[in-house]
Amino acid sequence: MSRVSQAQALENRRRAVAAASQLFRERGVNGVSVADLMKSIGLTTGGFYKQFSSKEALIAEAAQAAFGDLDLLLTEFEAAHSDHDAARGALIDFYLSAEHRDQPGSGCPTAGFAGDVAREPTPEEVRETYAAGVGAFASWLSTDTRDGLPMVATLVGAILLARATAGTELSEKILESTHKALTEPHAARPES
Image 1: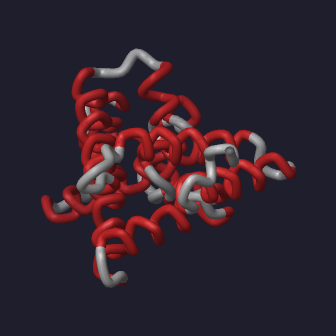
Image 2: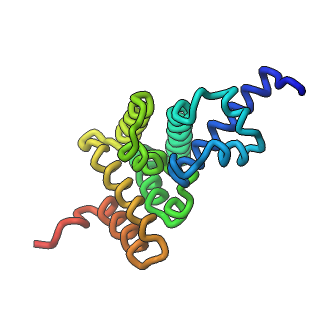
Image 3: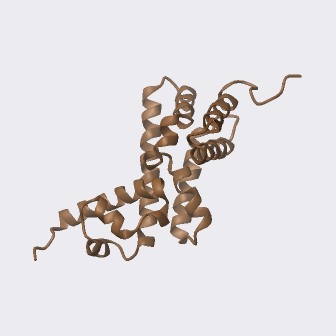
């Protein structure tokens, strides 16, 4: 039996974290077994336990990796647009798109991990990682005059409802009406 080099072991761990990050957002933590995870990267279940003490030990790392992906995405939006307001608008366009709705595995971890963190007995480290990620996202969405937390709540709620109703007219309406409410001045207020 050949031994895995330290470099290969680190690469295997990185691949397991990346795969878990995607699969947990796509299927939920309970929807992914250790065997499923390891099969997705071509390794054995025994290899998992050489890297992680338990599946729970992997969850915080997977959430942290997912929020790292979100940070990279936000940086890309900043680099591609002339100012932060334009970047924020482009992010809203993407977030409330059919593409984002239909690809939860590569989507926002705020939405992707929300159900599991809220519903399952979650280790404190996972809850803290999740809270820090939500806080950083809200901070990025904030303006000089508005806290970004209500926008995070609106975006996450909309994408979760759109995913839950995917394939129906209501799903499209959720995306469109939420986009309008967030981007058009006074769109959510009735005319006087």
